[in-house]
Structure formats: structure tokens, C-alpha cells
Length: 212
Image 1: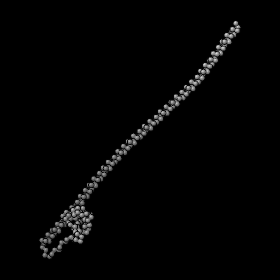
Image 2 (image 1 turned 90 degrees about the vertical axis):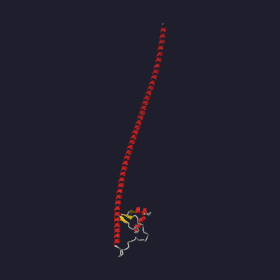
Image 3 (image 1 turned 135 degrees about the vertical axis):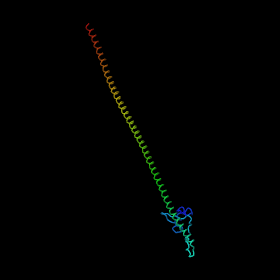
Image 4 (image 1 turned 30 degrees about the horizontal axis):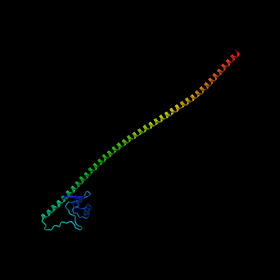
């Protein structure tokens, strides 16, 4: 006789698992046994109605034949053997379920480790990209700063050159003014000397005529 789990029995008889457990608790599922913390139920046993009890074997009458006793003993032995086989089978199924669960758990752990490794690799790549971008920004900022300093230095040099040229022009203008004044004074003195020379020449002529 095949033994079913609570879930399989509930599915076969269109019951909820909670109802099946209540039937077991109320002893309305004959043959239900607990194996390794889980109940196993004979496949073909029908739930008893409320207040109904499982049929029991009538006591043997004194005139029961030896053959009938042997048949009953054989039936009881077969039932016991079926129960033992069902118990062993359920334990084997429980072991298989445990191994399957352990395999699923190990696969999940491996997948989780792979995902963690992929995530760490992805984070490292992102960090490397961020560092590269930061270095590029620092380089561009330094180049911009250097260019600004160079432009400022050029403007300062241009301003100094303009100031120098302006000073030279001013000095040249002052020198030219001085030269013009001196030239004007020299011209005046020359004209004055020329007039004096002409006056002397005239006086000489007058004296010469007076003495003649």
C-alpha cells in the first residue's frame, strides 16, 4: 500500500492540508502514521465522518477454522510488512528530499557567490572608471589653470611693455621740448649777435667817413 504525504493526500481527495491535519488529529484517517516529524497516510483510506470509528475485526468465534486464522494472520503480516515498507519508503523519500534540498541550497550558495563576485568586479570597474574620470578632470583643471596663469602673465608683460613704451615716449617728448627751447634760444642769440655785428659795421663806416 502506498503511503502519501499530507500534501499529496490533500491533492488526491481535493482537501486542504489543514483539513487533512485536523482529520489526523481527530483520528479520522485510519492507518495514518508519523514518520520523521511528518505524517504518512495510506493512499486508499477514506476520511471517516464525524463520530464514525474505524471498523475493527470481530473477535474470532470458537468454531473459526484454522484456515481462517491463518488467512487473517497472513493478512496481518502483509499489512505489517506493507506498513514497514511504507515507513522505509517514506524515510528514503525524506532522505532524498533532504538531499535535494541540500543540493538546491548548495546551488543557491554557489549562485550567490557568483553574483557577489560579479558585483564586486562590477564595483571595481566602476571605481576604476570614476578614478579615471577624476584624473581626467584634474588634468583638464590643471591645464585650464596653467593657461589662465600664462594669459595673466602675458597681459602683465604687455602692460609692462606698454608702460615702458609710454615712459620712453614721454621722455622723448620732454627731450624734444627741451631741444626746441634751446634751439629757439640759440636762434634768438644768433639773431641778437647778427644785429650787434651789423651795428658795429655801421659804426665803423660812420667813423671812417668822419675821419676822411
